[in-house]
Structures are given as C-alpha cells and as structure tokens.
Image 1 (cartoon, each protein chain N blue to C red):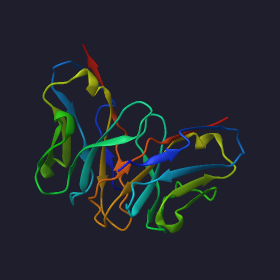
Image 2 (image 1 turned 180 degrees about the vertical axis):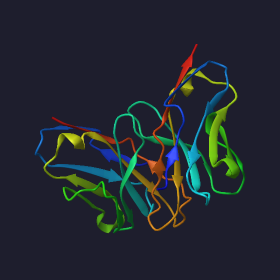
Image 3 (image 1 turned 60 degrees about the horizontal axis):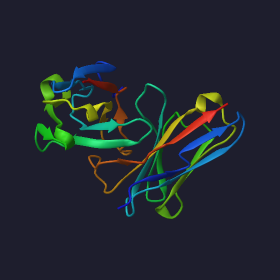
Image 4 (image 1 turned 90 degrees about the vertical axis):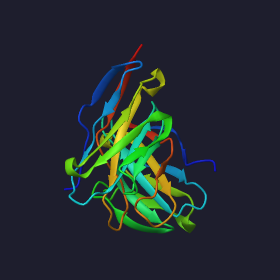
Length: 114
Length: 115
C-alpha cells in the first residue's frame, strides 16, 4: 500500500541549530510531495511542495527540502532553528489516480530549546 | 481570498446524537476534500468532491457518515448516531485545478468530542 513514513515522532533542537525532519515515500514512481506545518489548534499550512520541476525545493520561513529518488526521500531542513518553528510537521504525498487525496505521515513534533 | 473556513470550530455531543459540520472553500476552488485527524496521527482522507460530484469515499467513511456539496460551493459533513470513536479533528481542504500536484489549502478544522 502507498504510504509516507516520517522517522522520529519528536525532534528537539536548540535555537540556531540545524533542523532535519525525515520523510520517505513508498512508491517507485515519484509522487507529488508536500510538507505542511500545523500549529496547536490550527489547520495545516503549506511549507513547500515537489512537483518534479527541481529536486531542491525552497519554501516559506527558510525551510527547504531535497527530493532524492534513489533514497525515496524528501527530507525537510532549515539551517538555523527559531523558537517560532516549534510546531508539528507533516509530510504528505499524492500518488495520483482519480481521487487526488493526500496520504500523510504521522507527523514530527519539533521542539526548539532556547 | 479569505481562506478555507469551517464551522463550528468545536463541538461536544453525546453518543448517539447527530452532528453536522460546514466547510466553505476558497472561492472558485473546484476540488474539496474532507480529512479526519486523531491525536498523534496525520490526517486521513475521508471523501472528495470535484465541483458538486462526490468522486471518492474512503473505507473510513462508514454508512453513518454523509457528505454533500450542493451547487459546488460549500460542503457539509454529517455524522449520524455518533460514537466515541468519532472524536477527532475534521479538516476540510480545497484546491483549484485538475492536476494532482495542486496545493490543497486547509481550514482550521472542527474538533469533535463525543461523550
């Protein structure tokens, strides 16, 4: 079955440190890939998306992600964490077909220590 | 562009009662999705509309669930005879276009608690 796997349900970094959130997809055919952020009691906000135009995708708030087909990965990074980055991050994939729905990973909660 | 809105934001009900949620998508968006998110999980797909046509339903959508999108604008999700297992955040999203790479814009969600 098609799936998205996020390694690490909780990641903690110090302010100013590198943020690395991992995401792997399951298909041999690359899907469309998305990263969303969710703040407490809010909906999901798009950070960035991969649609095959470029393997390094830049998003909002200084985040970027690199698509690696050989590793079936789409990891999210930010060079320097800020306190305001503390939130839950979801990787999602659209594997195509008629319905167009997203398949989400279980999420990674990012904590930022001062 | 006022974004996707959902009403109510919170709903507490007793087991066995019926509840209805509303979603107003971004104007002109032709696709509308409903997802359910339980604690500690990512959103799970429930159903999908293209304009007024309901094109896909997940196996998660039991017979107690029904969704409509009359006239291809707002949508409603009704849960009949609620059960405690229905407690979750219900998210609505909309997108424009016919390409599966289009961005889905999410509303703030309706948090349901069934007592």
